[in-house]
Length: 118
Image 1 (tube, one colour):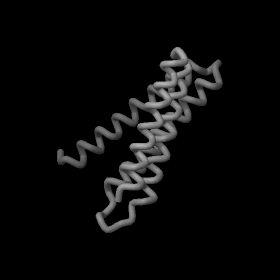
Image 2 (spheres, helix red, strand yellow):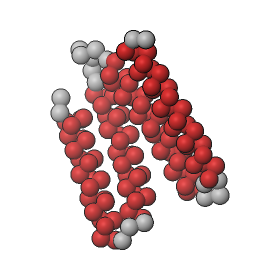
Image 3 (cartoon, rainbow, N blue to C red):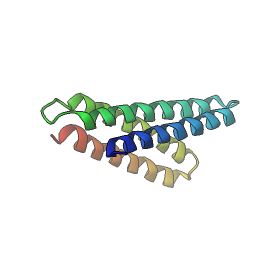
């Protein structure tokens, strides 16, 4: 088994685990529409992020990667905002503020690293 077939097998295994976990979370949150929407949105964003990261890795050095980098940054920003909103909601207000500040710093650093840095 060569390196690429192992990576493909691991990718498929991780996608299967993510799908099963998301299906169970959707089943548990079937009476809570907000939680179900969160699970579905996070799952969709993670699948899209995996697609764009794989596309980014397979590009040649001469290709223009700006669109792919922007898509990766937007999806990671979406996931950061979604998870920080959920975490900050169950924290005291002072700790919630720290969660939002850390999320903003992460988004800003990601923007610098993926979009502004050639």
